[in-house]
Length: 141
Image (cartoon, rainbow, N blue to C red; front, side):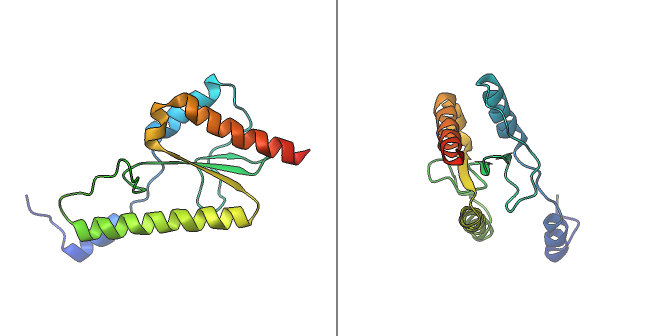
């Protein structure tokens, strides 16, 4: 069935749709942190980049990056159609991720980015989180 909108109008309509995170991966990380009694995190932070989880007392921002949307070198599969659009979109997402990480670190935030596929090895994810939290707890003393 052909699109009822022109290409320009469809682009305008789609540009107004805003994502609200990857619910499934965020819920998986919440469950992991609760199971391993990791406390002090908050969601819905308004700091730059809108991290999925923030440990405000320790200034730690945690992003759970979907493998497709963030161009994971291990998992990303380039779509067969509309390649120019997707190449540009994913490249912009990756550049934005770098900028957000760099800017937050310059503002004395520690940034942890967890790829979606990493959640398949939950103990490794928990180890990464604990290491960054432990390092900051030592630095806070």
